[in-house]
Amino acid sequence: MKLSKSLFVISTILILTFSSLHAGKYYVLCEGNFGQANASLWSIDESLQNIEGPLIWNASTNPLGDVGQSLTLFENSMYIILNGSHGVRIIDLESGETHSGDIEIPDSSPRYMAVHPESGLGYISSWGLGGLLVVDMESNTVIDTFLLGALPEQILILEDEMFVSIPLRSDWSASNKVLRIDLSGNSPEVTHTYDVIEGPGALALIGDQLYVTSVYYNDAWEYFSGTSRINVTDHTVVSMDHGSYTNYTADISIINGAAYRSFGNSVVPLNEDLSLNSDEAIGNISGIHSHFVGNNHILIGSSDYVAPDLITSLSLDGQEMASFDVGALPIQIVYYAPDIVATDEMAKVPETFSLGNNYPNPFNPSTTIPIRLENSGRVSLRIYDISGGIVASLIDDHFTAGDYISNWDGTNSQGKAVSSGVYHAILHSNSQSSSIKLNLIK
Image (cartoon, rainbow, N blue to C red; front, side, top):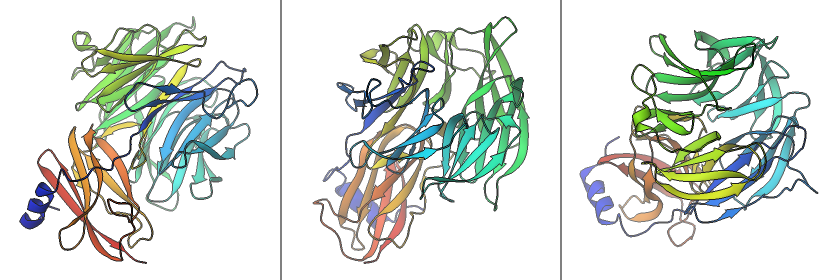
């Protein structure tokens, strides 16, 4: 919805009056060495100046667990998937990195997790069960299993559709499938199966183009990698095998609307035909184990399989900014800010610029506001009363394209609770604007 002229003028006049965006943190999960229960969690402040860790747990007296596999953010909690320990650790980030509970899933070999906000259900890929565990996110309990007869890997959820990469069949032989699953009904339903390069893993969506990286090996345990691109509208698939591969994983990210993947010692953009654009490669870091793109920085985790390993921060043009020692095998990095939580850790770029409908609405005391950004740029999100007066500023910062959520707790810029009534949330970025109505009831 476009802003009325009067509201646009008010927002322009008041745009610099207040900024309450809380500083965020980057969180680094280190896988640790198999069977040694030395997985670890670390945090790096938003300024990329200071690191803390291991957080909460230490390997000698209170271990996090065996084989830290992945991190998922949902609302103000972080879910740590522990493959070797067959469980999920839940961290309350709003109260300051507090261990708030666990999801015990014995013998499940969990891999990755994604959340479907509309239903309040989470999905965990499980090699032990050959399917997806279904989690009630309110109670943090497993309520069902969606069997696939194969070993699922990474998961991407966008609105009512879920994409799942399948690198292995149930007998552990190589698979080359990506499943498309409809979540709108009473139970998940596979609607399409796509053939890609063997060993599919990481997923990233740009418009209607789903990028998939693959890592596979031959009988001599020589590793190879490739990239596939699925047109989710007409279901065509294009693939490119990149040949011999030296990295253990193959992450994929979106930078300024283009797909970049790990390859060799760099993060490399893909050409239209999916070949590697080596001339525009970013970084030269040996032993890349993972990478993450956010807040105009690239964070690269590198490893020689023995702690300490390294996190290196680069600008988007490849300039090295900082480096930090962490635990063994940094496997995943996410970014969290109290007022802004990414709805899915997988990379995706939306096709539109908009505010989604807040939920709940009416609300008391707080509500969640979905945000969709089609382009990178300066973003502001502010709350106004019905007379056009500014109530609070939730966001005023630069963001990359993607889906986010912001929370408003019904307080003004001084932290005082506001009265019941109708309020307007106004999003502005790159000369575009969108607004929704919020109904606060006490």
